[in-house]
Image 1 (spheres, rainbow, N blue to C red):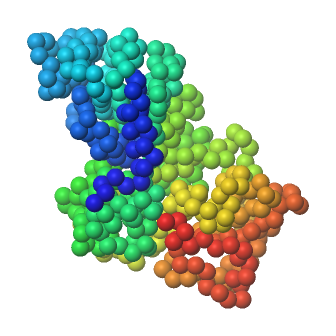
Image 2 (image 1 turned 90 degrees about the vertical axis):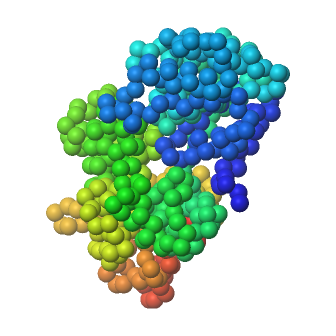
Length: 479
């Protein structure tokens, strides 16, 4: 069984660097639980000279680990790798010198791989870690033709600011960066198939809508159990493995995790997203630099995304929750006491509403597949939405997805998740016509044609109203 799914390009890049014959420095970053460590271990596991993982702050009640603890843990990793004759280091300069000694002692001319996992956790306040790390690579490591240094980090903002976009000692020193992303829907299906999990495409899509294509979560799925049983086992059961995952995620990534969780919680309640000012008011913070950093950190970590809806001014950016797992947790798991909630509540109205929104988000993450199905993958385009609040006449407009293409076609996309073909009735036909007219008015361009496009799980039922639909994209296309 192939244990690596959907990482073909990443595997090729890592092996290319391994075989380059010169000093290489690779940084891998991405959302926590996305499989960074697993990837490196699978590709380089039996070829490592030294491995170390920073100590998680989650295990400490203060949500912090001290420099002393991190240094001691690093020293133990050195001992485990064969270091002898050295006492505990008192600084990171000394610790990295010990690593140099270890590598020199074991150097037989062949490739030496150093893998340091969760690097951001090692950079405790006032520890001098980053300067020592920079010195290790610039002064010594970059001159070793047989050294390959690989670092990983789930704190994406730290990795971007201090390693990938570093303007100090590590400027232009990185050979390659890999942004590891969650599985696509097709990769999720392949992963579950490799585990012997038998689920329909509808159920796989719903699993994605709950767990967001995160390999770590999907790895706990059990054979012989339905989707509902797996969801209950992982999230609602008395001993559910992922019951506390939401809190652990934020504690491991952010110092002031309560504020970050507050932003995500407020966004989970707003289908159409929130502006920066609305977020500031909701969490009781000023709309200044601190909020800018928090929003950037959440977006870098894959929890939220920003968008400029059609017709909005450039300053009216809207932020939306973009993490399926967080949305599901905040909608159903946080306050639930029913250990079989998902199996007992299949017909709950809240679940139907969640499915509609979650399927929209799934489609947003697979826009490339939608464009392929429309046969416009190579056409330059801009993806946006439209949300106009109701006025005194009660007329409002909400369009899930708009694809504005350079070939003068605009796809007005309606997204529907149903268990049977979707039926367009007379009243909905009139609503669709009003949306088309409103979009045409906003575009104000006679050269552009609007194609009403339905993205559905089961297609559109043919009747006297269905002719308004120009294009259809089915769930199968998203795989």
